[in-house]
Image (cartoon, rainbow, N blue to C red; front, top):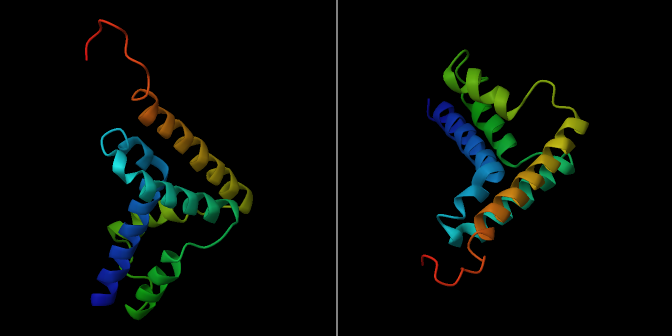
Length: 128
């Protein structure tokens, strides 16, 4: 039971990391101090996708699932809804590289949005 819970928690952590890699740059306007953590995560996410590598969370999830006696909770929420998002069936090396480029483009846009407005000069006599 504990391994099944750990497998599900690892899968949730994996999904949260993926969301942070792709969309975390948009949090920078509110919390600019997270830029270094986000940049490191985004670089790692892009590298894993572009190099067709395996994220270390993947074998950890598999290890916990095996210790739990198989694939975890067959038909449960995690397996049914989250696993196809993290591991799409049609994920080819070419599609994985395209996703890596998408991560880079999404983050360039997010950083431009987050920091672009801050550094624009204010107009004289305008609101402060």
